[in-house]
Image (cartoon, rainbow, N blue to C red; front, side, top):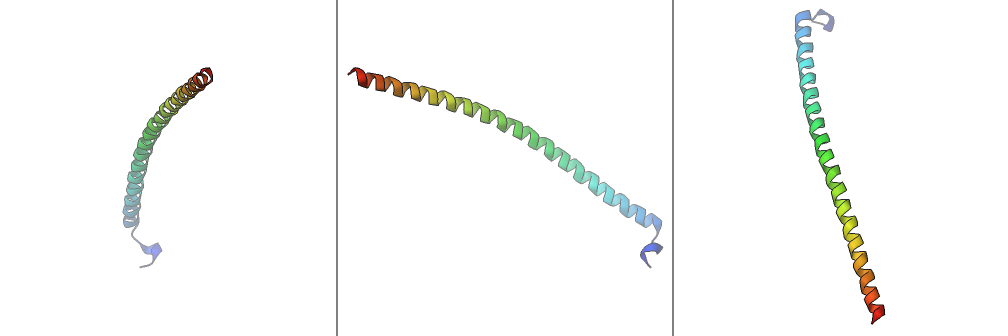
Amino acid sequence: MSQSEKDPYTELASLEAKLDTLIAQFNLMKSENKSLKVKQDALVKEKAKLLEKTTLAKARVEAMIARLKAMEHDS
């Protein structure tokens, strides 16, 4: 039986099965994408907090160094 002689109902069933598979894959990807976006948002917020803490720590260390230098010059 050649390709053109296939039963149309069999072809339709095959196409429906492929479509169902594609829909399932699409829904999985959509769910994974949403999850990744949530994780990315959390990581961006965490990075911002860490940068803020680093900046604050740097400022405090620089202030301590300045005070130490000032004490050195006073003695």
